[in-house]
Image 1: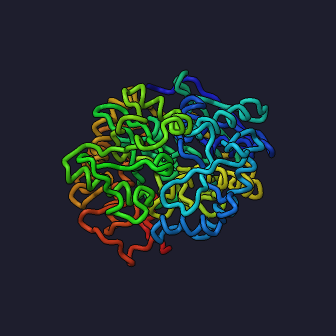
Image 2 (image 1 turned 90 degrees about the vertical axis):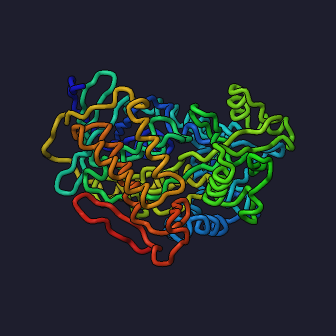
Image 3 (image 1 turned 45 degrees about the vertical axis):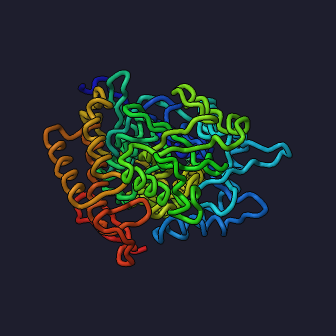
Length: 519
Ligand code: SIN
């Protein structure tokens, strides 16, 4: 499809993506100038919208940012950036206050105190949630309303960024494709903030909406930004499994309330894998489920909450209860078939502690960014927190380093084309990623995957959604092939041990050999 109508739009801030990081960044930025916020789908379609468990913050009197820091570092398997985690955990409380001031209403118990949930790897109850397990929907609905009523924010839906505009190492905006009009737009701003989310929807089994395809990583890489930790794709241990159907997240917070995992023989297996059993960190639970499935030759294991109070479970997890019921499963009486699904892209655009990338004028926050807070294994519910804490820091720092766009070589359109039927056209590649770049990898599978990805890239033009997806998939496979150890969410069959010599990060930058950064 060729680009037809052409438009040039200027603003103080260009924000790409409308999940929690994008919306929050837009609201922070609008206090200081005009904002253009673009999103490739509808405002309500984002990974954040689908988030269930909640948002972690050390709020209870028995908790502290230091305990939250310790849990995050432990889960991250010696690969977190300690300073970034200190910021994350210390700024959690003010971030929650900001959200409440914007109108987010976190669930409270009968005594009026915040009702804190429990998830794997957390040593304290510290998960704030809203509308039970519809936390993302509840937060995004509130923030979207704030964005829509803000006269300084211009929202462009169904608008995909297709190229970052860069001149002499400075980003000054982006080219975009408007899906409804097949038109191109040139968006100019001294500050561009990428908040496009992750890439887990490139996989066949995923908890993510179909839009989570990682194009922000492709855009940034092509523009010269450094991309880090791409081998670390986190698989959520428990997504609803029904052969041939889309996965649906079955929140870890159900296990936080006492749900058990059973193998196909009906045996509760997690105590044999970790002292915290079902509440072990996510990498351990996902790998244990994978191993039980493999031993039994089964496609899934089961989550059981039939021993728990049915009324409480229905109330606390109403959206999970309803969705499963629609699929013919009454979770208060029947076992839930679950299997791991691609869930969260730990790697992404490398940033400093303020969301700054190596390109002037370009910032990144949320899942597209790699701030270093998750190391090799993200602690549950730290991702929404990261969105809020680092979106704010990005806007505040960007304000201090703005340079005018001035006279620059402005182009209108680049001939970028979208996939016409993404789920159908991408399906074989999604299968390839799940099979060969999945939860457990090995050299043979990764090499084969890379060869195939390369072949798929050769037969097509260069500026397209297809190529953006292939680029991100290739970065994931290349990094996974390079890292010859098992650490956190990256499990190599042929290198099962964690190695001290690999306590470092893999960094890609266009036109250069892969680099290594010591932690
Ligand atoms: C969940 O509710 O299990 C997901 C939470 C997360 O991924 O942080």
